[in-house]
Length: 220
Image (cartoon, rainbow, N blue to C red):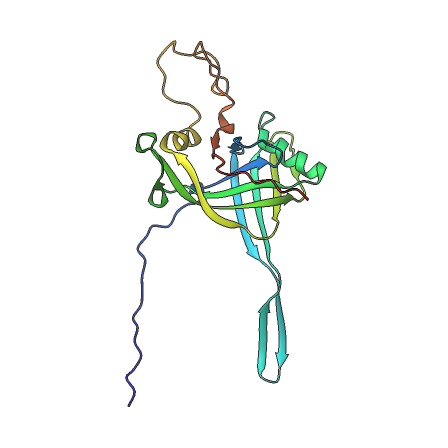
């Protein structure tokens, strides 16, 4: 008599995360090498859809199902800020028929892996990257409401897995509109802080930079 098969089970005790830990960044395809990614202002929702069609046929041997196409998209919703470069990037790409670079990053402490100089406290977080063609942009402009902007980026091909570098300082800036200050240390409102020597960029449009490593040019 054959031995019964029992390979056991596996279980994970890792914590679930909230959508707050999933951050999206965009960048214009026209930006030069070395340009920072843009964190869209006042994000409220993000949706990643990984879909596609299957060939589904009945045969004499039974049902046959095979993958046919890939259809991936990222839906983003945010409150519109006139000085937010992300909104301009998306709208410009839609008007000109270009794609937009987009990253989806899991910014959870348990997922970050130290990278580079330890003193800079940079960690690489799991990320997906792709080129997205903007679908319809929808500005919702109720008289007494904040203006909402939502749009879909249809991914060219499929999203690619990789990592996205963020320092502890960068994450703190993304989480907060401003840092602690003492009386008289600065002037200006929270979106236009001036410490006497420098003026901050608008708070919701914090950026982060990924260095380019190689450049390849092909001539035909």
